[in-house]
Image (tube, rainbow, N blue to C red; front, side, top):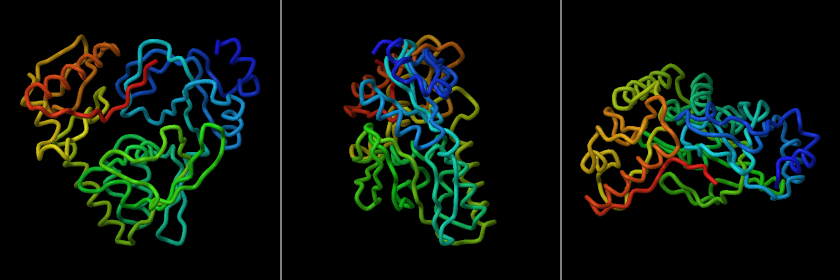
Length: 303
């Protein structure tokens, strides 16, 4: 639909909508153009009504922290939705269950669990992004994954219908699950193990120190670019990349981190095409050198 038509259709949400919204500052790469429509949903009832009025007439992309997303420099011809304050809440149920909104940062969930003496969430202290993104990609590190603690997830389909899905009905795999890409995750329940709070925090700090020792921090990166090819080789993605391309490789302002070969960096002025070309070149080079086809872990938002 044309913007003028959307403005008329979505008139009642005008205080929550930005048209031609800048997306560059809404992702960790600091790359990207604009969205035709950017809608911040603070209330569930508003999100439901928005989707029902939109009636699947536009492409929809939900953005969390933008920690694993590469966004086109063009105007994204669709609607970008960000979940607001009422999806950013945490509560305890029966002393060992946490109810979390999906806009909550993974680190915040981990800290909340530690403060309440619940173990099992320590790995999330080292994962950038939000709870919604963690569920979508079955995020994990240090031998733990989100599936290990998930009880259920509440979601919304693009027609505005709310459903609750028990974790036991979800087929989780490494950095993947079988849920529809069309679902918008709203909240989730997690089960922890009651332990000493200080011991939990000590373990979180150990994870943090280990991560900072091996991975770049405080730079414009989207974390791991490719999934580890666990069913094809014992080698990690970074090892295959290191074997296959020079770590001096650059495409415009996009380069490979010298600290971790699976982390790609915007040195300051990288474009979408720079980063996409670097990703594609590395993927082809690894296949040419090793015969292993890498699968992207980052999400690419383009028309």
